[in-house]
Each structure stands twice: as C-alpha cells, then as structure tokens.
Amino acid sequence: MNWSDRVKILLRGWIKGYKRLDMADEILTDLWNLADGWCERRALNPLGRLLAAYPPPNGFTDEWNQLYDALRDIRALCRDQLTDEEKKTLNNVIVAIQKMLDR
Image (cartoon, rainbow, N blue to C red; front, top):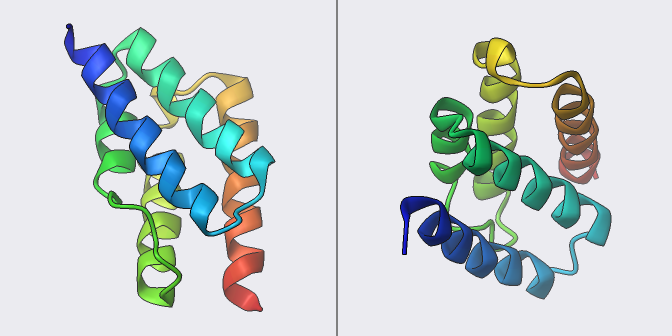
C-alpha cells in the first residue's frame, strides 16, 4: 500500500465523522475531491494543511474554526499548487463553513 492509499483511508474515516454531523453531502464531496486531487498530484503542502485539521470537527466551534482556518491557509499560502477549479471549490467550501459558523 503506497502513501496515497494510506491518506485516502484516513480521509474516508474523516468523512464518516462528518456524515455523523449531517454535514452537507456537497461539502463532503468537495473536500474529498480536493484531497484526492492533491494526493494524486502529490501536492503535499495543501494536503498536509488539510490533514492538520484532523480529526473532524465534532460540533464544537473551536474545531470548526480549526478546519476553516486550515482551508483559508491553503487558499492563501498554496495558491500556486491549486488548479483554477480547486480554487473555486475551496472558496465554496470556505463560504459554506463560514455560514455554519455564523449561525
């Protein structure tokens, strides 16, 4: 099993944690697609920043803020490693989480 497969197994567990929180399927799909693309391209900087927010938020605001901050860091610090489509998807996920935090 290579490192990419191991990361994907870790992310599957993370996504199961999100589903327990009834997080929107679209956001789950977007996060999975981003991480999967980064694994495939070996874009370790954005992937590492995303995984730093692991484990998934359990509903506490601090953990949601940690994920939100990690995604904003990726957007700000890893722009040169993101495709245009990934930038768009990342922005959408950030906005969705921000709306959840503003409730």
